[in-house]
Length: 224
Ligand code: HEC
Ligand code: HEC
Ligand code: HEC
Ligand code: HEC
Ligand code: HEC
Image (cartoon, rainbow, N blue to C red; front, side, top):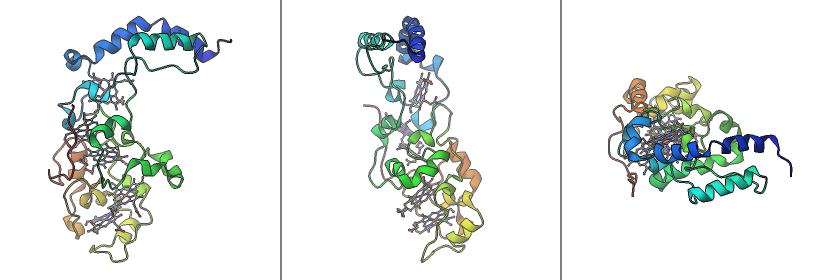
């Protein structure tokens, strides 16, 4: 058995277990919400509990400690998370999974999106929605440009055709007529002058008013 570098670092970490366990258990206790919040949660999540996204790691704290001691000693191949899991799309989908999603994330695991994924993690909710930033959306409103460069409609209904908008690089118009997920009842306008102003879209990203209206095809689950 050899103690490689990462294991040695792990031994050092183990010395901090009591502090870490205490930290993990107190951090997500409701009473501490207002004190230790990592940063402001977006408006739509104001009623959520920390634990709705920060799920407990599987196993009891004792099992986690045992597993990590075994890892540090070289008797186990991997370490386990302490106290709570890293937040991934799984937590989001638990409440936001819906049929008829226009841009489902699993689709962007396909090889043809490999290059796009280097610029934007479209295969993860967190690629466009980091939490704790007091914002609904954390990418720019021109995000459409990553994938719709070849856009051309055979019977284009717009007064300025999509092909022309793309040629002129008017990527900040897209969200003026289309939402991203297709979850709002909103119907796309057909005159570019009727598109929502880019300032309105940017404000919506930052918790401002929703220009597409409040009517949604699917409502998110609340905590159960
Ligand atoms: C809607 C989901 C969600 C809710 C609710 C939520 N968080 Fe988070 N939290 C995240 C995500 C996603 C990250 C990782 C990205 C980041 O650092 O912004 C994170 C990161 C953190 C981190 C940093 C941990 C690390 O490993 O970097 C802390 C601390 C934290 N959250 C505390 C809280 C507390 C306290 C609450 C309750 C007031 C809370 N969170 C509620 C999603 C959430
Ligand atoms: C426990 C359930 C739950 C979890 C987990 C959760 N959400 Fe939400 N989310 C909601 C609810 C409820 C709302 C408010 C109602 C709505 O807008 O549908 C909401 C609102 C939102 C909104 C704003 C909607 C609007 O119109 O204002 C975004 C964006 C969002 N969630 C993204 C995420 C992402 C990304 C994650 C994962 C990090 C996540 N949510 C995790 C329940 C959840
Ligand atoms: C490529 C970027 C991108 C990814 C990836 C992404 N979103 Fe979004 N999301 C957006 C944009 C842009 C908006 C604002 C336009 C709109 O409302 O559709 C948005 C809006 C939302 C909203 C509010 C409107 C609604 O549909 O109710 C929710 C909730 C949401 N996203 C959840 C998620 C969840 C959950 C995931 C992962 C399964 C995810 N998003 C992945 C870009 C993204
Ligand atoms: C990561 C790649 C990616 C990004 C980013 C992206 N799209 Fe798409 N979009 C797609 C794919 C793939 C399709 C499906 C096209 C097909 O089936 O031919 C699609 C389809 C659509 C459709 C048609 C949906 C339908 O049901 O007919 C609209 C509208 C759309 N996207 C708008 C947008 C807008 C607006 C943005 C920017 C906010 C955007 N997209 C960003 C990949 C993307
Ligand atoms: C003035 C409003 C408006 C603007 C701006 C706009 N669109 Fe559209 N778009 C429409 C309408 C209307 C349709 C046809 C009906 C529908 O799909 O809702 C459409 C259709 C689409 C489709 C479906 C194509 C198909 O094959 O069915 C995609 C993808 C799309 N738009 C993406 C974009 C992108 C990307 C941008 C930004 C460059 C953009 N749109 C800008 C209104 C707009």
